[in-house]
Length: 313
Ligand code: NAP
Ligand code: GLV
Image (cartoon, rainbow, N blue to C red):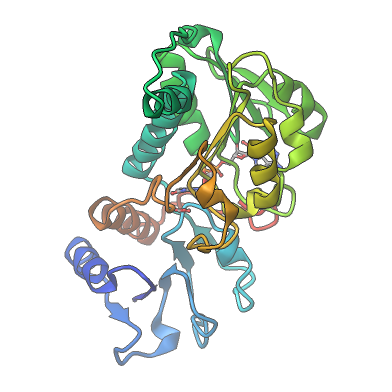
């Protein structure tokens, strides 16, 4: 039996989609009558504190989020139950779209021409070709690798930073803390696609911004964060955008969401804010993914995309 525990999304719609795809699996929601010990799978999003109460026969926890930082911090998370996270073509495509749009916008000096337009100023400056721009991607997992391939296809020089070594055609990889500074020194546009873990918490801070390359982009280096708000120190971003350490930033995620009305980031001209919309997949493609996970597991195959709880992603 599968229990849905989805907050802030249309749980009823998910239940219908999953019911259609898994006709032999009982599917229940919180208000239904069922025995907690009959639940084999629980599908969660923003779970409440009591979500796991009485679920003594769980085979897996299914996470609607691709990022599992909040789930791993749940105070009552069962210790030895595998967590399957969301990995989905549509979500990956949307993240690639977000990254490409923002890299192109900054490379083509959008902020500068916008300011000139407002001032009715005809000032010719010719942005360099994409092959002169170095994009550095932090995190070379599902989303980072896909974004890297798209950017390489557009001609950008792409570097990546990850925990373990990667061999990706056309991309120069940097590994671990010891290579972070060399990676940053070769980065004009920094894209963060790391998971949020104790190691990556607050990694996007002022000292890090000072290490980015200052000669590649006319207005200064650019930060694009589409991963988690916990990665960034917003006071440092505001300072860096104001004093020119950063030329611009595109932020999809924030320390507190929704971004509080009194955040200085709202007012900063070269800060591009989106409300955590870079890549949220729709229930159609999501339901077929989770139905496949359950179907295959029930047929004796290993679970897909299982989180390593000790690593934190
Ligand atoms: P993933 O497949 O788990 O990839 C994580 C990558 O980060 C891996 O390459 C990993 O290195 C690297 N990494 C982890 N810790 C590191 C460290 N301490 N130092 C250097 N590299 C480290 O994750 P994903 O699916 O690409 O997703 C990334 C994040 O995007 C999610 O965790 C989520 O928070 C965020 N997200 C945001 C949205 C949105 O709408 N804004 C949507 C979906 C996801 P190894 O390869 O060596 O393990
Ligand atoms: C969204 O932010 C996700 O982690 O899926």
